[in-house]
Amino acid sequence: MPYVRFLNAVAKARRPSPIRQLTELLQKSPPTMISMATGMPNAEQFPFHEASFTLKDGNKVHISPSEMKNCLQYQATPGLPELRSWLKTMQKTIHNPPTWDLSGRPEQMDLMITTGSQHGMATVCDMLVTHGDKVLTANPLYSGTIAIMKPLGAKFIDIKTDAHGIIPEHLSEVMSAWPDKEQPHHSDSVNIPKLLYCVPNGDNPTGAGLTYERKAKIYAIARRYNLLILEDDPYYFLQFNKPRGRSFLSMDVDGRVLRFDSFSKMLSAGIRVGFVTGPKALLEKVNYNLQASVLHTSAVSQMIVYKLLEHWGLEEFLRHTEEVSDFYQGRKDVLLAAANEHLQGLAEWHEPSGGMFFWLKLLGIKDSHDLIMNKAREKEVLFVPGSAFTAHKDEKSQYVRACYSLATDEQMFEGMRRLAELIKEHQGKL
Image 1 (cartoon, rainbow, N blue to C red):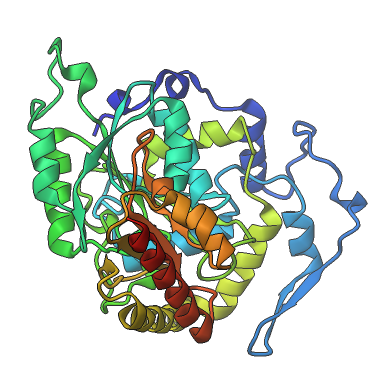
Image 2: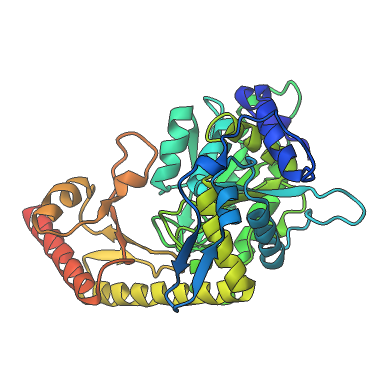
């Protein structure tokens, strides 16, 4: 699949860093290699020697002196080789991308470590989005994505959603305004959308999840109109319906999916390790971008993650993800019960299918911003107004987002009671 159409001028102009290439070459060199090429500091001068981390079950994960010496040093931009290898095995086991292993041919897919999945998304958008580009998204839209794309000059095209996420029929209807494929010298060619951004599971803010049937229809539309799919899936392991739904990556026969994963919800939000999986040709451009910016994600963080995953193995990691998913499902059930008790007739909602968020439509309120940002604070309860999740200037929203990850049972019931009180007070003033 050719990718020139999708790259912006900055991405096309980027070239590999000779110094960064030497770093990767040195990793693969035999121990007899004499190198006076790279500008690496002497790790013997670093004060750290080794480290141990105690897990909640009492087991320890140990970083030996040689491993510590290695991860304190500059690393190749794509990430620690041992962690990348582990993650590639996981992606092949869970998602089995059709174009990864093609008999007798070079691998078409690759994987890179990023400083959290949002860092990966920001890097990819920097190379794909040109000012004025139309990007297909749901509305409401994750506020972090708005913050990434809007300054780049993206023009958001809203695709209708419901309790199951993006509605494929509306996506098809929107795209029918353009020819099936980009046509040379066609007057509308430069305006054809080329990117579809999607949070397929546990959407932030709505909690919605796409069914397999919808994903298949959306992928077919992407093939018809030559779209790249940005599959932003940090809540993949927080799906409440089992078995977990298939990913866009798992059905990608063309190489038109860039998938973003994160350890923030499973292992640690502060450790800042995520990874992007997709076509080698595009990840090569991601590599060049990172070579010119962060060089690589913290190798110490990568080593901590790797040592834990090595200790657990894939089976134990997946067991851990089930425990985390069960925890958040229990939290969701409590908030749902609290809403049913206090907000009947005052708000509308659908039950989240995954993630950490509850999306409420407040009845009789045209815009929730003042109610949530000012009056709710006076009652000592915090939510996020729906206006935070719209990319369009001055668009009003009668929605609010509640997060059920941290609040106790008692706090969720009391929070819903206070919200109900606010809505009633507002309705009484109409």
